[in-house]
Length: 315
Ligand code: NDP
Figure 1: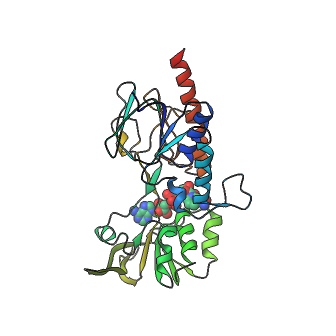
Figure 2: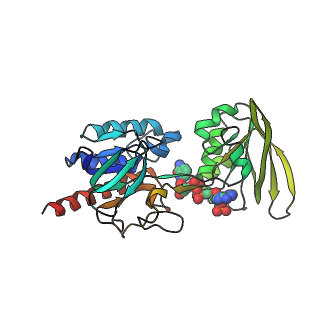
């Protein structure tokens, strides 16, 4: 069985790389499926100031590049494919890639992370990539000296708004309530930025723009005040959605236990899922902390759990 491994890690964010680092150093030669976004969510962020060990901060993509190099030093191998189907009903566990290649393994570490949530409007979908974005660091550059809005009241919204002031002429944060979920430090930073304005108790009803054959651009949004129900027209060129994330766990539906929002359920203080030999770590199983460092920590837990499971298997 040439595609058989002791450990397969699905996902390449801080959780997946840390799991691969530990299992690599335990001589288990892990395989990492890097997925659609190698390096995970930190690839679309800028400065990471809260990852211990970097006194002056580090750029997200650089951190992931260093993690990958560190992991490869210990015998882990990256495969730049996406797992589309799994069968954990018997051992060895089976996984299929997007080009329909079968891999099997004795243990699986699920580190598939989470992705940005969207509002679910038809018009948002229509203009996605043409003025609507869920990643300021990816697309902010395109809005030089233009007007943009950021939807959301959490830390992501504050971070995106601050980042966008580097490019945009004016940034308006649209939030559905009048109190903010964002941490005080992030909120205060955004409030102190003269380019950022806030609009509370407000939601987007519709994104509109031009849709010609070679020209599709956002020209504005229809905003609704939730207290007065008044709808107003707000001209902008860019709409950034920053309303949180959802776990990338669709392929495990009906196989691994998850909560109603799709976060994998692990046994208290371990990375164990309902299937012995399958472990979960990082944002795929954490709707609460969702930090790079907590993802890395749970990746370490999953690696140690997998090592112990393999030891017990061989006893
Ligand atoms: P949060 O869940 O914290 O915030 C989501 C925001 O979006 C909330 O204000 C919510 O409103 C709003 N929202 C959700 N759904 C909708 C909707 N359908 N329409 C309109 N508004 C909506 O997510 P974040 O991504 O901001 O943060 C997630 C975690 O990551 C947090 O723990 C945060 O601290 C952390 N983080 C840390 C950063 C840092 O320290 N550098 C940077 C970014 C994130 P409401 O409040 O009404 O529910």
